[in-house]
Image 1 (tube, rainbow, N blue to C red):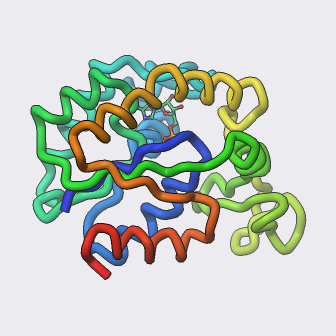
Image 2: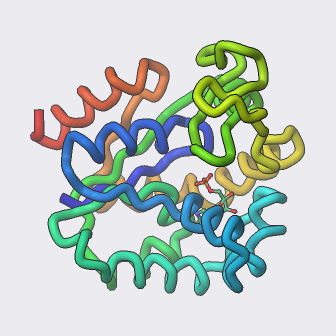
Amino acid sequence: MNIVLLGPPGAGKGTVAALLKKELGVPHISTGDIFRENIKNGTELGKKVESILASGGLVPDEVTIEMVRDRLSKDDTASGYILDGFPRTIAQAEALEGIDTIDHVLNFVLSTEEIISRLSGRRLCKSTGRIYHIKSNPPKVEGIDDETGEPLIQRDDDKPEAIKHRLEVYEEQTAPLIEYYRKKGNLLDVDSAPSPETIVAAVLKAVGKA
Ligand code: AMP
């Protein structure tokens, strides 16, 4: 089963994808994670996209589409995948149609107020990737990872100016995909306010896997 997760930054796509991946036994492919991994490893791609990610803008379509085409050609996608953060533009959605058939597009819906609160309070441990929230999921000791004792960091793109820019980019470039997929008939709206476990249960039911 091939699933696309659509929705604004901070709507919980990554958290839900990590749980869904276990339930469905398919890989979670996050374009944001792939870019961050390349930046961490100092690859050519990483150098090219570092400042774009820090500002909250979008990596050019050609670069992103080729990266996804390559990732989807790997053997582990044979029985399906969860695409998180792609497509983000109409051009990417059209390119995806030439690569594969998408069974379900899950549209995560959350108020702007809640999005800003989730993103601005998000903290993470760089080495393990573990994610916290200063209010809803705080570490035992403020600013410190529970397991490794390392200081928690805030993603550059979770800082106020970048959040504002990411939301504008979402409205302009990505939100039109909601109508695009609704017309195709494979869009499912997902209320992102409840807990990730509740969302996953609702999604499994909606896609016939409960
Ligand atoms: P995310 O982790 O999904 O919020 O993505 C982090 C950043 O990676 C975005 O703000 C963009 O700069 C870049 N990015 C991720 N996916 C895409 C995409 N499909 N198209 C262009 N840029 C992307």
